[in-house]
Image 1 (cartoon, chains in turn blue, red):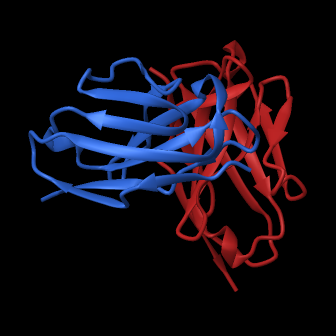
Image 2: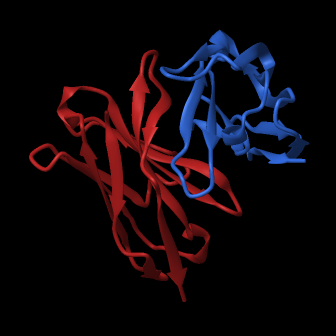
Image 3: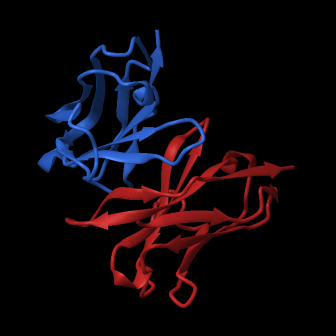
Length: 108
Length: 121
């Protein structure tokens, strides 16, 4: 199965700052078959990005995804208070679909 | 707007079978999409368990396939999970989700709040 490694495990930033989260795959994800999710404590995960860079419906444009092959990035251009959460990446190139272990964005 | 809600026991004894149900509102499960179960445990992180189409077609995680059965009930707009031979390693938050199919099974665009299941010895 494809292993996804997210870094850093925790990112400490202030509101208004830029967040850059990394997701690295153990093999190349052709067609950029990668999604990103956000999860706030006690809430359901929310789809942010699919196809590595396509924002899901209703997702603000401060969230952007990029990358190809084995290296992908989620960028939050200016952190809002509600953006402090845990973020997961997920590949859907092969079965079983797998997730990264998550990056927690916390308030500095 | 589609909403999903898991229901089932919060505590299961080791070696027994877990049964969970997901009730979908705001969308008919027979109108398309696959429907999935995913779990999140401290030891293994997020793990896709399996997905089902309303007609009964299923896809399971190869690592769990011998223990998993999923079913769908269109009259109740629900789908269900059975996981046999539970062990402590199966302790997790279990989520149901809507599974988007574009080029095969792809991403999950709506999730339930999750149901914590603890396996006791």
